[in-house]
Image (tube, rainbow, N blue to C red; front, side, top):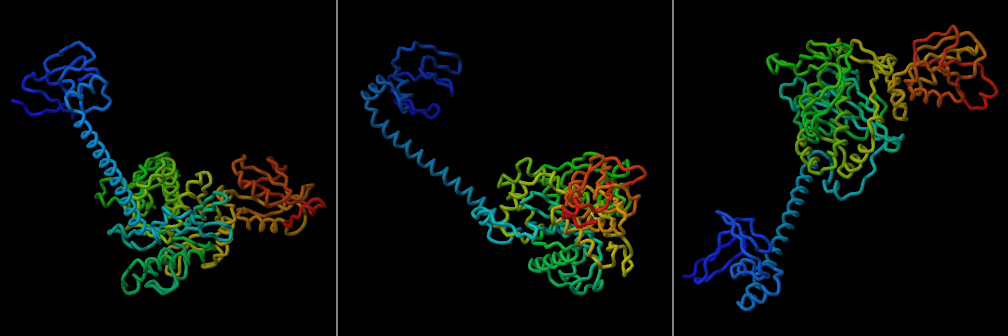
Length: 552
């Protein structure tokens, strides 16, 4: 009786009733020459004569590349026809497998493309295919070549957050692709402004209520749609632009969930806590969520690692409900927000996160309901390239209250609340606009050094120090004082660097502003100062007149 055909690892062997069945061969133990065969209960060794045994012929028959003797043996057995059929079957199988692989690849690309289309449609404006197919589209810019983006942060993602539609986080990011420089300018949320339309609070109030007012939630609870949000975002951008003097081209509106998801997506971030309190920082404003059995914002001074949840709470911390280490309240919160943004950008670019389309798609999926922007999809590729081109050394974080303390101050508003207001007058923003103009013109590195200058008149000419002081203030340099000193044989301008060389960008700006100035490090006898630099104005000479300098 002929037994049923059996297989070993996909090969067939045949035998007749007259032949004894060869030993069962465990998988993976047959040598190429078939000189030895291992079986379950031991090893059977036979001499390799160069001619396969009948059952070896049967086993190896379907394999291409048989030697002449084996092929001749197969021909004698009438097996060549079967081998050709098997080869044809293998070709068909290979063809079907190749087709299956192509289908899987195309299906994957189609799925990725669909997800990209769906995800980008939630966040950006326009046709999502533009991200993949369109060339880099130039970004909109102001007259100085800057692309200015207003970042708005609200708290709609937190149902327990009071005032969820107040923009408690407001920041302008200005990118210049020619110089590869960026400055981040926080807009104080308590800055007093006049609204474009009346709200419950009246016609004027804090700038953080502009979005809420424009959205209509304070005017009878009007329904909110995405179009309403876009209108409110644009009106908020117009107000911030008119107050600061910055021409804003783009708006990115996010809620707290975005911070959490982005930071988690890049694997967490590292920042440095710099608090005047030796204990670091503590804010218990959010600890009610754990019945005050935990600390959601508590960090020592120095490097700390933040998860997405950590970053979300820290971005809101301002010592609102007890704690320590955040004495400036909102201004400390804004500084930490800038740190979080810079650390996230640095982490995303350093690990190649943005280079992986699936990373970007998953992130967009997560952010879809939590982020909205007027950035067109055709501009996304350009934005990503611009971000990659910028190093952290070229990003300047600006705090108006400390970098130029002569512009804004705190006080009490007409409604009795604590507000931020211009020193020049309740709604006189001219000083703020002059300050931001210098940022836009590229002087942010010097402004970020927070240097101060004393201007002394050693020329004997009345008003020389005030004239030079006005010139320096015009380029964003903080003038600490203007006074007279004993007239002497000074050059027209002498810059005394008493910062110990720690303010190089300010020194460069002073030299470019005061043409022909000499630089020294030791003050003249009898001159003292607590500023970073001292500028002494000397008499106008023929040489200095020829330099074309008008200041002084």
